[in-house]
Every structure is written in structure tokens, then in C-alpha cells.
Amino acid sequence: MSEGFVVAVRAVISFTSLLVFANVLGKQQVGQLTFFDFITAISIGNLAGALTADFDSRAWPHFVGLGLWALMALGAQWIALKSRWWARLLGGEPTILIQNGHILEQNMRASRYRYDDLLMQLRERGVFDLAEVEFAVLETNGQLSVLKRSQYQPVTPHDLGMPTQYKGLGTMLIHDGTVLKRDLAEVNLSESWLNAELDKRGIRSPEEVSLAILSTTGSLFVDRYEDHVQPASIDDELKVH
Figure (cartoon, rainbow, N blue to C red):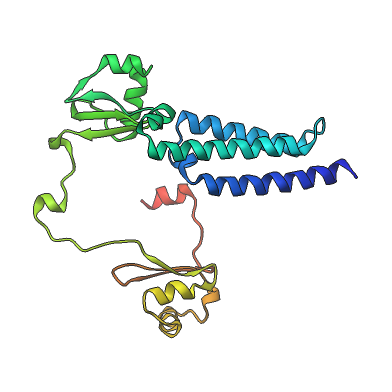
């Protein structure tokens, strides 16, 4: 049996294992990447790599290690849902860095967080003047949550007493030329209605459509594969504007 074939088989096994474990562990590994999650992801990735190309040892010990890491990570997540103490141990707690407009130097030192880091993350959130900040909280994933003083917050329709329309998530009706019949039925519409809407836009078949989304207000967004739009460069856009 050639090494290339063995590598291919091991790669398929490790890829399938990672796919299964990623779905079991859920989105927390990416959406809330704490230091513990980062270490877990790196360790599982290293084990998967060793399972693929390490010919100095048999494959099954690497596979067992990969499975155990995933099971332990899943167990740690499950315990964290039940125990507040364990959740704090794994992910830590948010730390207040600015309170009532004052920087808490002790919390900054305890978090080993530099002033340059604070100013950079404030700029990333559109805050260039510390005087605008009421609260700033360092989250467990390293991101900074910022609450501006009331006088610096943008005006909303609620502040002006203006009525607003509900806007929710749209419903995808066509994806990559295929009509999503189940989603179409969920909004109580038929394929004949969809075809009529496409016909209004000069589209003869759903296969001409790359994406079609129905908004909660009833408007239909349709993007064709052939838009007949001449691509423009950034320089051309700057010249136009």
C-alpha cells in the first residue's frame, strides 16, 4: 500500500472526524473564542494533522486522542452550562475598564491590558474621544464593548417619537438557480407566483437567478447570473464620484 494512498485515507478520516466534532461542539468555538476554546481548537487541529501524516505511529492512537479531546471539550461546555463557577474558570469574566467615564487602572493592570490596546479598540468602534465613553467592558473573547454617554449616542426614531415598520429576516426563495420549495411554502406562496414575479423582470426561468430573497415587507430581491453590468475598477468609481 503506497504512502500516498494511506495519507489520502487518513485525511478523509481526520476531515470527517473534524466535521463531526465541529458540529457536536457547536458554534461556540468560533463565535465566543475564549483562550480555552483557542487552545482546544489548536490541540484538535494538531491531532488531526498527526492522524493524517504521522507514519511513525499507528493511526488509531491519534484518532482516540482526537475523540477524547472533543469529548472533554464537549463535557467542559456542558458543565459550564450548569455551573457558573466552572464557566468562569473556563472563560473568565468580563472586566470593566471604564466606569462612569473613569478608567479603572487596577482592572487594566489585572487584565494586562495596555492603554494602546484600549485606544485602538475604541477607535475600531468609532470612538476617538475618551470623553464620549460612559462604560467600556473587556469581554471574555477579548473584544471591547462600549457604551457612549447619552449625549453622544445617535438619535433613534424612538427618541423622536417616530413610528417604524417591522423589519425581520428575509426568506430565501431561490438559491443558485434552485427554487427552495419548502421556504416558499412557509411564506404561503406558490411557484406560479414566483414565476410571475420573475417574468415581470424579464426572467424566463429560475435557473437564470443566482439569488432571490423575499423581505418581510413583501419586496422581492432578485440577482441574475447575467446582470449585463460592466465591471468597473476602484479608480473608475472614484472618477465618477
